[in-house]
Length: 117
Image (cartoon, rainbow, N blue to C red):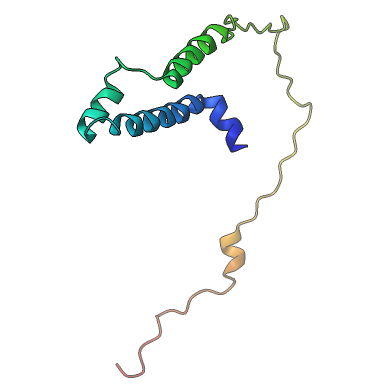
């Protein structure tokens, strides 16, 4: 699944390019210093055969990419009139007063006093 995701996102080209650059740096280190090897690797004037193959592969992949023409979606609405019909009879449902039901007793009047106070 990870391999499919890498190929689908085009990350395989980046992976191959990293391998190519690593090989180029190693090859260029045999003939010069690290600074010279890095400069020769990344200047773009000295591509290796793998870099050329990667560039050709990227170009051919872009040419073969299928471009789907964008289509405008149209939705057909029915030509019917929308009518609300009221019911012929309407019954009311009695509402419950939950506050009265939950407190059946009245609070004591006057409020109770503190025993110690």
